[in-house]
Image (cartoon, rainbow, N blue to C red; front, side):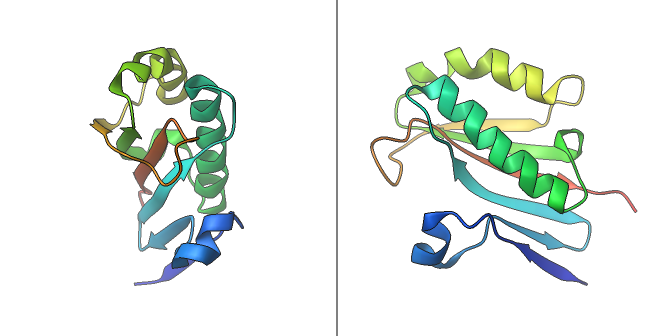
Length: 120
C-alpha cells in the first residue's frame, strides 16, 4: 500500500508532529482542522476550505467524504453551521458525529476531521 503525506504548512503541524492528511491506499484521513474567523460560522467555512485543499491534493473532493467528526467547545454553536455543512456536502452527506470538547486554543470554536474514500 502506498502512503502519501500532505502538509498544509499550518503552525501546529510542526509543533505537534502531524500532517494535514494521510493517503493510505484508497483512504484519505484528514486531521482535525480549525479555521480562522471571528465566529463559529466563519471558522467552519475556513476549516472546510483547508480540508478541501487537502482533499484536492489527494485527488478527491467533498463527494468522497464518508465520515466527518465535528468538535466544538459549545454544542449550542453547532446549529449555526448546519447550512454551511449542508451546502458543502450536498447530495453526498457523510456519516457524522458532533462532540462537545475543549480545543487546542479557546479562540477556536470548531474543529472538523474527515475520512474520504477514493474508488479505484
